[in-house]
Image (cartoon, rainbow, N blue to C red; front, side, top):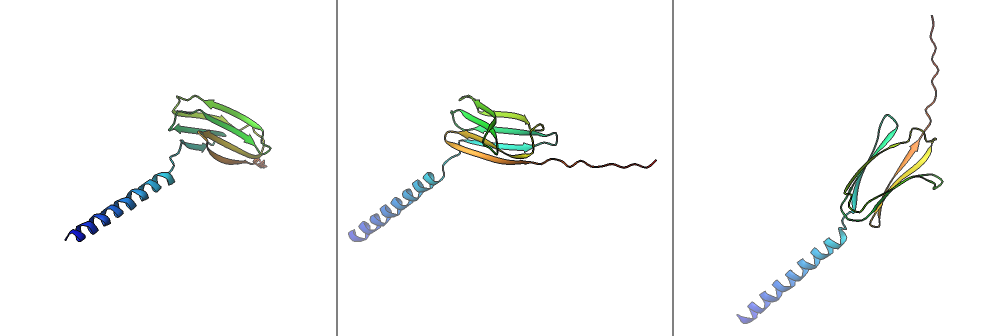
Length: 126
């Protein structure tokens, strides 16, 4: 009877140990995001950018062209938790651009391709 109880306690201890170890691995593998972004294109030629931070670090928003030149850069404060901006890209020439949002060592980026609209020729008969 004593051997049975000791075996039962050993099995319980081992199963508890494995359960806690698996839970710890899950927490390490699921690193929480420092921020969330939403980038929306408007018909008017503007891009709406929305950032919601989950930390107390500065956030850098920048727009780069394909040559790596920074066309727009803004740094938000540590205490700013929600940030919204409308960027007018209607005057930019055709090409590839990147919007990057960086905070607490994490970066999210979106690529933009701007194309020239071909001129249409209108003919009317009178």
